[in-house]
Amino acid sequence: MDEKKNRPLMDSAESLTGSRSKGKSRLPVFLVLGIAAVVCIGGLLMMLGGKQPAQDDSAPSLELVQLAAADVRSIEIAVRQNRYTLLCDGGDGYQIQGKEEFAVDGSLARRIIAQSVNLKAQSIIQEKAADLKEYGLASPQGKITIQTADGKKVTIFIGDQSPVSSYYACMDGQKTVYALAPTVAQALMQPLENLHAVETPTIAEPYAPAYLRITWPEENQKRGMQTLEIQKQPRKDIGIGASNYLMTQPITYDVDVAALAALVENIAGIKAEHYAGDRMLESDFGMGKAIEIVLRDTAGTEVSMAIGEKTGDQQYLRFNQESAVYTIAAEKLSFLNDITLAGCMDRFVHLVSIDKAEEITVSAKGRTDIIRLLRQQDQTVYTVNDHKVDESAFKGFYQELCVLMANGVVMDAENLGDPEIVIHFDLAGDAALHAEFISFDRESYAVRRDGDTHVYVQKNKLDQLLEKMYALSAADQAEEK
Image 1 (cartoon, rainbow, N blue to C red):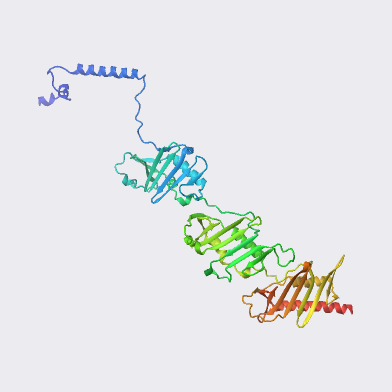
Image 2: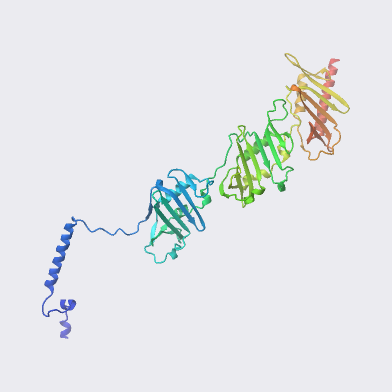
């Protein structure tokens, strides 16, 4: 009991330090050692000029890469099995190594460089990671190597995506695992096709072309033609047709102005939207059986397009026989399936300005009538069968005659008989227009114009015109009597 009362609260200094000379206190020794330590430290601080000890700066920083963009000469990007190298000249010149024809999108190239040379992590996931495999960094999905003008190389590895959407990353030769923002990681792992510039060649006057040709593959002839060819004609000699455009394939005929305007507007709207890849073989992207379009302006600048196969809601497209292939929304090309021969043809049978007409001969129903326009110094005299007719009445008849419009297209004109009505125009400058009207069916006449038969008109239209001409002639002959 007395032993418990007399037990020390702490072990003695002797028990702590071991026994040297029993019965002697060790406290003076500790005091001496403490004072000496203080003196040594104080002297050392005086020797260092009063500076505090330098702190350890080996802790990892969130700034992974800090370089000058102008010093970058190449960035090698390897994403899974895809690898390419973006070459830089320190300015705005960019190229893909080994792909001289690859047109690099300069804006995207600059963004990739800016992102890579000022690379910052969101956070540190783990310092000195024991196993990088846990983060997908033992076999990373992305490897980005930056090389500068002085030969310095910096490599970043990008691994798996974390549950919170960021990507794991580390620097080559280090074990610290970082978190990269998903936008940063995805910007660094750009697929090569994204780097291709998306450019559509243009011509100066797409809405007033000098030449247009569309050719469909042989198996797609669903519109009675394989090639539609239209070219601009001066047509200064005669005024047939409502425009200067003439269809030369599959037939030779005047072109409908409104139809041509709508067609070239749709063609001018064909724009490359995304780069799809390079055509290596003729059959790639369905280009072996493509729809071909050629558009040329009056200055001679020409743009050609090839429309390949569909892929989902997209369709492949390339320009000017180049290897680059793009995609465009298939719905923007649907107009190519709606083009018809009838829809492109000018519907006027004979549109002749009254100022160009000199004599018109009409043969029908067993009789021949001759209309003359006799131009004198101050006036024009109009006659039918040498009888003068009223000017306003004649002009009304002439307007109906010249705006006679076709009702449809004749696809087979080989077995037609003899004409029932013939209208022949003698025009100024020794020009002429010859139109024959042949019975096509019960309600229609096929029109053979200058030897070619392509359209038909309703019989009642011709019959009404003839009746007006006969009435005009009869009225004026009665007035003369």
